Length: 331
Image (cartoon, rainbow, N blue to C red; front, side, top):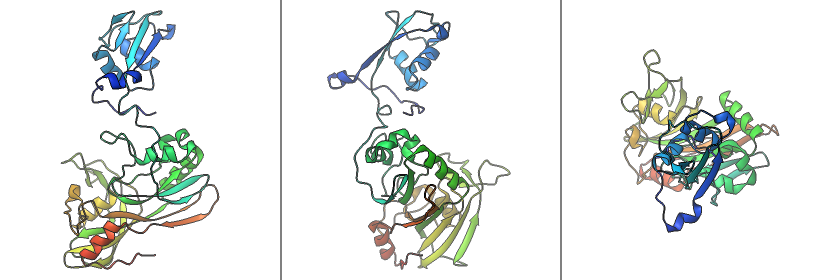
């Protein structure tokens, strides 16, 4: 269980959750003699973050030799007795199986490929501690609990739909991560964007991406001589265009955060409904118009050359039609 993220606050206790409270009795071993209380707690209760344990101290949930202890710097001694009252939090309950319908495009004993719907968060995080793809994977097959992040090796944004590959074992996960690092996984996307397409039908954007210095919550094309970032390359082909919008096919050569969204903004074609990068709602579409429609890689165990596809969801196709764009999925 990952408890690295900081906790905002402890939950209040009431009659309904009284049964969930755990009082953990701990005796100080010789190895922790002379340590600070907060450090000793981190060693004795490693499954919770230090931030959470410090909050327990501040809320009087830790007793040292029968008396309430609130000072993290208090020194502990061999033979001291700690009683720690712990209550479940949204974060501590996040990594649990939740049955959900998964659109599985391919599956064998080693891996699976899912077609993620728009709106589904991939991994638990603040604001989305449950109902994520990870929770669904934990319910889908028993082995997921033995694999870091339930086998998730790459992510799609919450509002991006499409194909994702997931490992079922640690060995396969490591192999898939290596494939991605070597750029041996082919990923193709379809996007609806603002503006009439200009110039050559296929254009390559080779522009580094880093944290936007003016807005740390988003990414931007950056000059590596002046700002931190990583090289990024996307091949973008226009499939259809009107005076106001275009439908494009994007081939990733790298996998930077928000890469297509940033590179399309850089070309002055922000994605439809992508408010973070300057796009407005259009064609009744209320989420960023991006779909991962194709995934290609060599199966790390069987050696099979997998070519997997998922047609865009109905909201994407409806928006394209309303915007006057002709959809013909490329091969």
